[in-house]
Length: 120
Image (tube, rainbow, N blue to C red; front, side, top):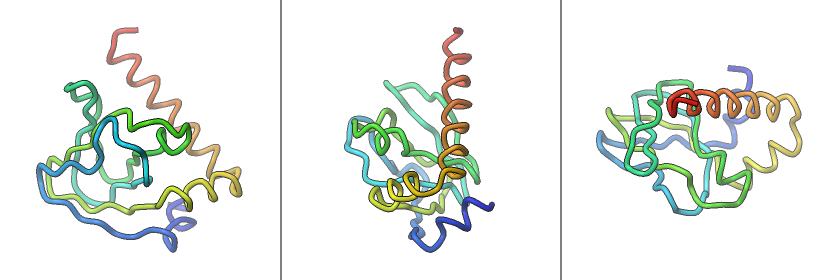
């Protein structure tokens, strides 16, 4: 909640209907997202690898490394998201060590979860 307060003035609220593709695997990254309401699935290589619920975030990998989106996010219900543009995201990461540590910890948890789902 503390981190959400830090970014709230920099975000816009976006809404999607059920079945909408929010980001597409292979596309360039242009924003970071935080789920406010609803559920979505993360799909890589045609396989669902994770489900998103309120409080979850996505989109940071391509913003951090400059590469293409590593997965798609498709809504399973109507969804409300906070959208933080790439430039604002990178500025926050550079200027706020606590937020950056929280983001890195979340990324580490995600890597562990994916490793477990792949049987590693």
